[in-house]
Image 1 (cartoon, one colour):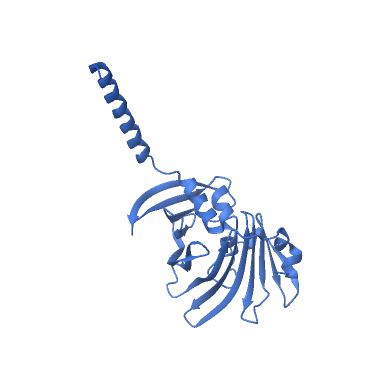
Image 2 (cartoon, helix red, strand yellow):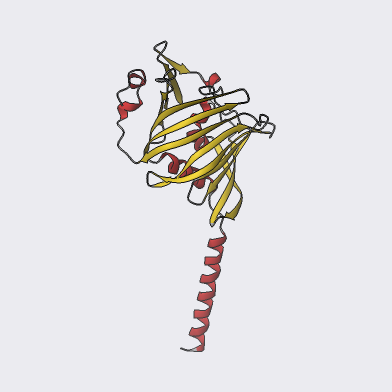
Length: 255
């Protein structure tokens, strides 16, 4: 090889190495991480059974419910225990929510003014059930930092509402592992004060993937109050008919 050709080869190799290094240093897209985390959680469809435990200083309450999701816009939650709560259900279609109470045999549409109210007396709000699409569509996302923990890269992302977004939070901070498992979700008010936090406490293989099987929602100003959600079973990518997510099925379940 001539000296000239050797120099050209060296220049090309150096340019390739520099380009590869720059690509490796390029931070991942925060919005894509958020979407991937939500897609991982919901999949194309899912079915799960979970127990919710509401803890208060002077009382505790537990209920078990079944959850179906289909795509990004459809969810159905139906309580199956205890007996006094069985049949209570919540349906989400796009950004609209309905509840069904068998004791009064009524389907009620939840107005936007009530979306921030407690769901079933827990520390979760109606809005928390519908938050997935809002977080994708109504927020700007920025990667605050990344770190290594237990062999995984952890991404901490700040999500700030768009100027016209109809949301209650001033900002949200989401912590996602490199396999798109949600580890933490913090909610801040319009003054930037932390109000509540959803924390993943246990991960476990379930339904062919790693699932956050125990999560806790807790307000920061009430250290003796919280709500735990424990997933007992889960399956993903299953066939769920569109008829599952209808007002008819909400009132008269056929699942």
